[in-house]
Amino acid sequence: MSTVADKLAKKSTRKTGGKQVRLRLVYIDFWSAVKLSFLAAVALAIVTMVSFFLIQLVLSTTGLITRADEFVAMLTDNSISVASMMGLPQVMAFAAVVAILNLIVVTVLGAVVAGVYNMAVKVTGGLLVGFMSN
Image (cartoon, rainbow, N blue to C red; front, side, top):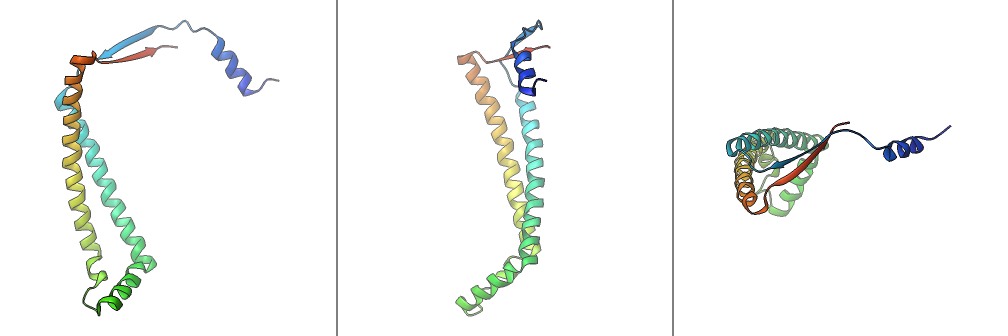
């Protein structure tokens, strides 16, 4: 009885008779790249909002915020309250600002990368991609 590794070795030595296609990527549509990067940024913004919410939930449930508030109050004679700055509305507002800024930056970066690639193709000739059918 042969092992799985023996079967894979036999398959790799076999010559496949499939067709091979080579394509050259010479142009990325600017608006398609902007739309795709915007969709990726929206997904990243959703992940950011959910992660900020979950981190805030864990910190408040474990009591770390109240301990930090007590420690800071001891150092500053109750002039600064960490609990009032780390409430759920403040954290979610900060998360929304971060998500919006991230949305703008990722969308612009997608457009810039598409433009730079389209200019670099004129020098390099594009990206060669090979496909093979089994």
